[in-house]
Image (cartoon, rainbow, N blue to C red):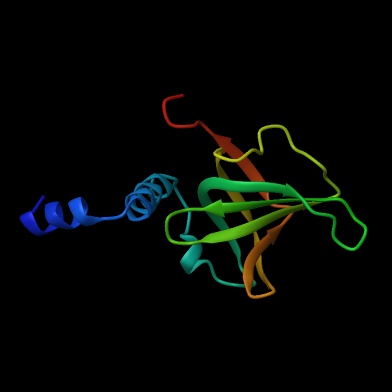
Length: 122
């Protein structure tokens, strides 16, 4: 590591350090794209950590919504017809696969296929 990189890492905010760690962790998942590079109206595979999970009905249909963060950005994962899913909790790492669409300017994947991944230290 160069002196410039060491100085940059010492002056980085906690959020910058966490984002860098998430980018490294997400990069370990084979075949995944970053959230910031996920093309709209294309099927993608993304990996990251769930920042939040909320039950938010959509037009009278139960919907579980989660925010997936990978260090480059975040997107919404929405499971229609579900109130809860075992293992889908804040802080959980997962890989999700599905079609990206824009809902109110935000990248969203409806009813993604997913794989739960171990938390750090597991």
